[in-house]
Figure 1 (cartoon, helix red, strand yellow):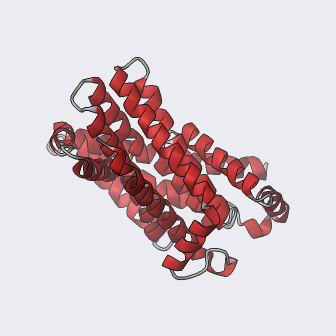
Figure 2: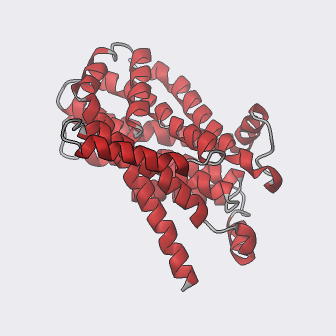
Length: 316
């Protein structure tokens, strides 16, 4: 009975987190209105501005899935060219890493649940007060509140790994097969992102599990690599039945991320060490596990920055 309750607690926390993230994203999109479309059309004139625009829009809407689907839909409607869309998609990959930093910096060191209820209260006033009726802005506040509340509940719901030695041994056995383990957890990350339909939510789940000691640094990084592949599925599904260039834009996103993951796999241990050198504290030591989320956020960011730098020259 205790296990069932704990499982439902985790699932409920995840549901609150994902719903809050979706509400936040949709509220920002509605509040911005046609301005997001104007930004995309006006500021994708060359490869560099296209990358920056994709980054900016993803940071604003807090969802790379939403921004890439938006980009593909604009290509379908001939509002963006294929060349413009590829640069914007590269920027979206970088933009989605900002969520990881927000969670790593504030999610585990600050009592974010204290800010959750005031945010929800402000949002409710904006939504239901007839004089101040701003559903879009209200949804943004409620989304923030639910996201923080879900993350707080998730931290409490994930049990202490020290109290589960059998599970710790099982996870250790899965991570003890070298490159095969990396591939296994990479596939798990891709599947997790497809299931929750949000790479930001999937990364948040991964950081929470890492902070709780369930998964180590290399395993967490492998899962994040998989999440970079899983996030491309949404845009590819949205492109079905669209124009030829729309399908090409979605496939370019998939190819770009898959090729990036492949070269990263070849350099995986060296890259982990390089990221470790960039930040203080050891992500391998349980005594300093509080630094692990920041290392993973840095890993995610640097990977996408380098991947974009490698491929931006191929955009016509």
